[in-house]
Amino acid sequence: MSDTDILISGGQPLAPPEDSNIISLEDFAGHNSAEVLRVDGDTELAEIVPHLEKAKTIIVKFPAFTDGRGFSLGRILRQRAGFKGELIAEGPLIPDQYAYAIQCGYSAVKLDSILYERHSESHWFKALSAFGLTYQRGYAVHSGPATSILDARKTGFRDAETQDDPFHGLSAEMALKKACEAYEGQIVLASSLGVDSVVLLHMVSKIDPNLPVIFLDTGKHFRETLAYRDLLIEDLGLTNFQNIRPDPNELQSEDPTGDLHKSAPDSCCDLRKVRPLDKVIRTFSARITGRKRYQTPQRANMKMLETGGDQIKVNPLAYWSAKDVTDYIRRHDLPPHPMLALGYLSIGCQPCTTRVAAGEDPRAGRWRHSDKTECGIHFIDGKWEQVPTKKSYEVF
Ligand code: SF4
Image (cartoon, rainbow, N blue to C red; front, side):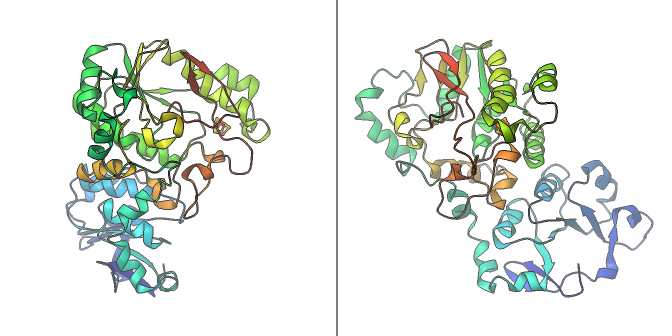
């Protein structure tokens, strides 16, 4: 960074630490009076821990606007290592990311003054209180969200479709607890590690941290998603997290170059998602989903407990609105997905996910340049089926 850098703290531009006082990780131990440590965003916590007592300030470098690994490192430094000094995110960040950095425990961001001036001073200041709006922007929903869980429940009591739902009227946590008890040893949470997955993962961690959680590790995820996975496993204390991966022999014979997603995305999803998930999910008789009534017209009457078909579905968040998700994440101080601050509102495999512009449907960023709208994973009449052309969010 140049000597025209700006430090933004409390929404205000300030002078950053002198460059000559900022010492790299390699040299820090050799400088007796050094107090300002600079590390890369992908540095392992174990490499920083020996210097935490001496470092009064830690500057974490973000090499690019699109590299969100430093967010996770900030959170880990605060929550896991208990770092209490000044924590500065350095790099080409924008106001939304400033807000996100604050959420992750940063005290300030340091950036080039030219970048700073591309946004008005009020942008940086407003960003401090705008995180909730940024997060909720991800929910440009089809039928409009319920305004709150209570409103949704009130509406639900007049809904004939819910009369035979044994879980109707229970809170999400209570429904989940009852399901975990009723189907002990046979129930699984399939998590996409998307923007609101942390809610159910947090609830599961409180009820039974050893409950099986499965994640489709397609081999094509953003590195931020994988870092987010590792962060949540550790922070929430999940002890039975399973990464489901494609069969290596099938990968070798059907996608040896890793480019199948370019020529035949449906086949790629079948190879990397449908088949691996199908093998594992069938070994459980009940499955927890994060599906919500407001998301699609097909889900408008969805029950919290669905017992038809081969597999029982537990939908603890059936009555939740987007606001309920945001409120829960804030109330429990849970880390949002790092890609959210980069403008990714629906997050899947890296080659098939792009940023979403303000006002776009959150899923507009998935398979943007093709007709494809689905990963092919659906549960229909008790069977997992591939339905490449039908728009649905049946699993996650
Ligand atoms: S989302 Fe893209 S990369 Fe991922 S499995 Fe489907 S086609 Fe392949």
